[in-house]
Amino acid sequence: MKKTWYAYPYLVWMTIFIVVPLFLLLFYTFTATTEEGIRFTLQHIKRVCEPIYLMVLLRSILLALICTVVCLLIGYPVALILANKEYSQNKVLALLFVIPMWINFLVRTYAWMSLLGKNGLIDMVMDFLRLPPVQLLYTDHAVVLGMVYNFLPFMVLPIYSVLAKMDKSIIEAAEDLGADYITVLKRIIIPLSLPGVISGITMVFMPAVTTFIISRLLGGGQYILIGNLIEQQFIVVGDWNFGSAISFVLTVIILISMGIMRKYDREYEGGAIW
Amino acid sequence: MVGRIIKRVYLYLIFLFLYAPIVVLVAYSFNESRSRGRWGGFTLRWYAELFRDTEVLRALYNTLAIAVLSAVIATVIGTAAAIGIHEMKRIKKVIVMNLTYLPVINPDIVTGVSLMLLFVFTKPFTQLGLGFFTMLLAHITFNIPYVILSVLPKLKQLDKHVYEAALDLGATPSYALRKVVIPQIMPGIVTGFLLAFTLSIDDFVISFFTTGSGVSNIAIYVYSMARRGVNPKINALSTIMFVTVLALLLIVNKRMSKDNPKVKESVRSTTHHLKKRGLVKSPG
Image 1 (cartoon, each protein chain N blue to C red):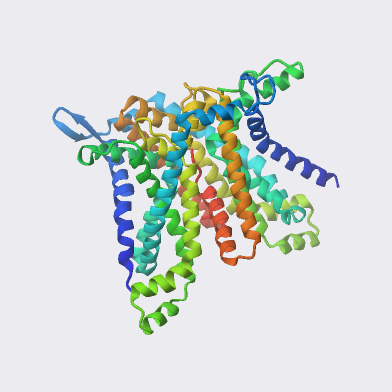
Image 2 (tube, rainbow over the protein chains, first blue to last red):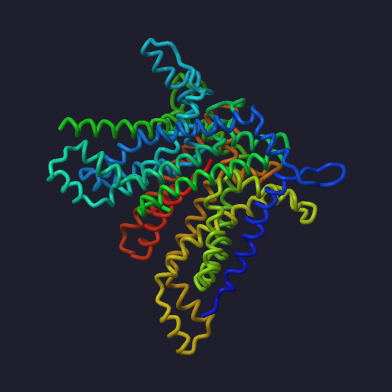
């Protein structure tokens, strides 16, 4: 049965709406329009490397890394507990963990605005405890908090799915041979769950480094991450060349981090989500 | 014993962290007082204001229209593409599948701005300004790969001898396709459609960059309001969105419990895909 031509409309569609736009992005990144016409240039990429923009880039990566580490520290025990015998039969618990993922991302971020803001719930609690109010909204802490809140399930679920599939008899064997819980955790559970950990790290780091909603809503108007910089260049300033150059650099960062993760993934073999 | 209690407390704390903001959000949507610090009594005022706001109603209409249209078109193109890709030779298949994964892996913001570049760049030729139609095109584009990824596994499970038998018995290829292949891959198609519909309703980033001049969907509306600070009307809108999602989940679960294996299968794989999508990429 020769039906390959069924895919042709799709191929045409994807060429127009995926391939051509990416080439346009490259085109804008590496050209400048002068009086003599369009010419090749590296000036936009050079501009991204100016200290002021480099700082934005570094801050985005730093905040995303902090978020990833916090998610791992909080999320690993959660996955461990959920995958445990007593809880693994509990469908409601698993569902309760998945429901927040169904809620629109903006709504989840917005929810924190009323908690953190002036006269918000946290201020009220502090007031009740006769402590001075803390201004959390529009700070670094609020942005990291928003990221952790939004991306925690992306860390827990891949680790959980690897842990749930793990052969429990290996753990029993280790226990029979006299290993205590810490040793089992260190020598068996954690090494075997590494593919899940790696997927989790990728899935938290990538959206965290590209976000512009969390920083805009919880970080305030003047708070700039790489995503905000791109938004600003395209929506407000209208400097497409520079905007494209930043998007290009961002894509390269994503590809590099994905390459590193893939490499580790292959070393630990299988079990990963993708 | 102590370990057990610690585990339980830890889990409850995590659930508190996950749900407290949402509970507070819902509670404030019924708060008479505009200031968040005080409880001014129960009211439905913000909901009434929301439904009187023509901007919200227009955004709701845009969201639903684009979700339905983009899901239908993406399902048609994507299903045909999956059938075609399934028949391809190895090398060609690998190339096409990599193309398919491209928008799935690429950050939303990069897909968004590159589509915006395309639409603005081609405007002199197509006379097509940023608005409803460009947003629809963008949604179809990011939906197609998910339809393909839902249908392909079903095609792989398909017994190709059944199709050949139909041909031997005198069916034309297109008749056999309609009567033999399509019914068997139907669960995958339904899954793909539901997935596309959900992703379209949920999308903010790509819509944000591919729309213009006053055309917005619900997500863009929420963003533009939230940017200006907390507003009880957004709390009301968010509550409605949350309740809708919960209701959909319950309906899906109920349909699952009825003994309809086909629906059950499609629903199960939808949730699976949604989870997977959450794992592959997240908006924002």
